[in-house]
Amino acid sequence: MPATATRLMAASVPPESRLARGRGIAAVVTVLLLCMLLHCKNADAASYTVGDAAGWTFNVQNWPKGKSFKAGDVLVFNYIPLFHNLVVVDKEGYDACRAAGDAKKFQTGKDSITLVKGGNYFICTFPFHCRLGMKIAVNAS
Ligand SMILES: [Cu+2]
Image (tube, rainbow, N blue to C red):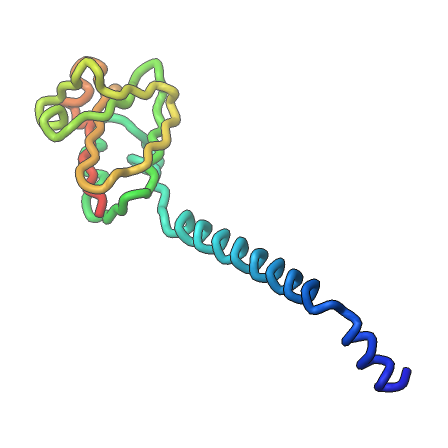
């Protein structure tokens, strides 16, 4: 094909449609960048199994020691729901091993909790369990 014919064909594409194609590409690139950003945010959040292999049980109190947590990290609590539960409390509730009546209670045996910035406190409210160290305090930065 002679060079002039190619040039003619390229010129026959109306400029508006080329502009539209450019906008389409820009939109796709924007969506891809947003996906990558969201993915990075998720990849940044870590997931921890509370108590490691032993799970959420007695004497788990020291498990958070030496670990650093960030808001958005997820704690996974594994336990037998017949024997334990998981209740979100505040510092006072943690210290006194007492949950308010409206405290958020989980009892599936496998609960995933996303940490909020600051203090995150969890206890088991089965009689004496909290006193036996079934409590954790986690500070998330
Ligand atoms: Cu318990």
